[in-house]
Amino acid sequence: MLGYSDAVFEAGKIFGKVPYPLLNLPQANQTYSYQIESYNMMNFLEFATDQYASFMVDHNFNGFFFNKIPFVKHLGLREVVTCKMLFGNLTNANNPDKQSNLFKLPVQTDGIPITYTLGKTPYIEGSIGVANIFKIFRVDLVRRFTYLNNPNVSKYGIRMRFRLDF
Image (cartoon, rainbow, N blue to C red; front, side, top):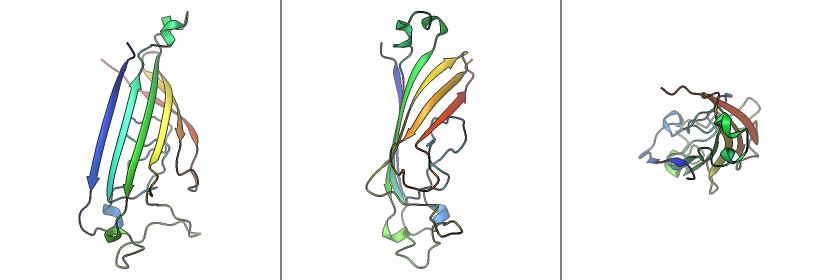
């Protein structure tokens, strides 16, 4: 009656000492297309971890709200809500600030960091969207909730997904 959810939980740990390029770099998306298993408001290489846990849930209300609105019901639109969270950190063994023989995390030419480590606060983003537009499009308003002070990040974004189902 209230639709269905797709949930994905993932966790990982890198054992031993590895250089920066081999750390876990969460899958980010800086395009205008909506990617289900990517962080759509995260910049490429924004975070690096060697132990992490992520949880993503995508709930499709399957027309629960839109079907109660006259004339909109006939369009077959579907409501979608998504939440994505990433917990993690960088242990001392892989932290270049604590280990002098590791690659340093990337910085811009003016010295501002490009890559950060997750602290005690998880990275969180969420979206609300409308799916089944002309049977093939989905449009989402995505909001980033944490790490808003990092340079070159946006709080809001609009993403679109194109999908054919046979």
